[in-house]
Image (cartoon, rainbow, N blue to C red; front, side):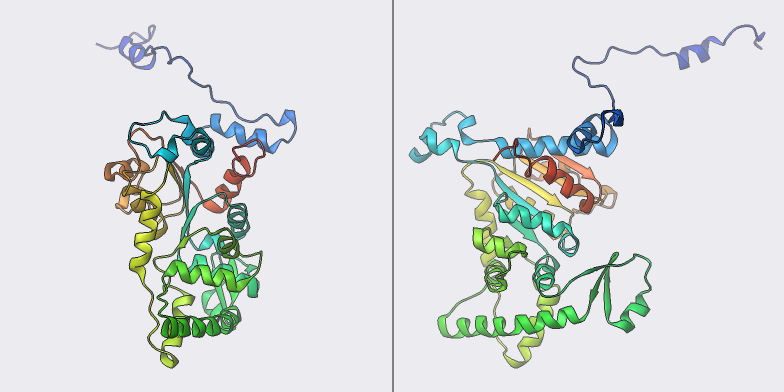
Length: 363
């Protein structure tokens, strides 16, 4: 039956003007930062929590890191099966969350290296996992600089000039030649110690030694050496260090790298944690999975923040959601993990500014 045009159709009105239930008590209203109050960067970053989208995820990540850092064993009741040592109240209040920190090599190539160095310098993380590039680029930057370039620079032209591009960063190839000159005598000495003393090197012990040898406070791994922070890189040969080991093998063959020792060490770091564990991961791939899998050995970490641009629709671990990790036992049931879908060179400095670097945050 045709409408006479004088009345809103009832079915259209019912469809558009659907009633709403009341929002649950405590629901937060969306609100952004008001610049009429002036420029206050801490207040601006705090406002992200109520902004929505990935800004809210950032705010949730800040809260998760603060929970991670503020927890003490003294917050928990003493269990009947606890070691006698752990029943001492003074001991309990000094046992904190063990933080596993992972990042991909691009973050060392970029200026976020200095943010990572700050965390290592002040011993704010307990275990580090990174890629081969995440190791060697730190040492190379102590020997020669990396420069700002452009994403659009032509690859063929750069190759002819002997300049390597990492996104919009430029690394002259001579930097790797300088790195080889620095690395070769160290490899010779490590090989000598293997032959004469029976020393068997693992990726983590090589990194520890290189941190000692660089002897430069600009280096992340110098501070890891000084503060005895274990650094794991299961794919250590997948980069310039691998190239150096390859070249070295022609004149001095037989160098052994024991990766089995490191899988025992990192899994023991998780299994032997006296309290809770937390995972802070920038990026994906081996650094993400290596940390998550170690925490599987203790039925999952209690805290987790992942910052990544990878998506889960392709089934990759790099893009997998924290909820998927729960299904594997890598994150504890009941935990409230956060993934920020964003690029880490922006997010990591802001996260550190709002957590680790704040004087009013957990020390």
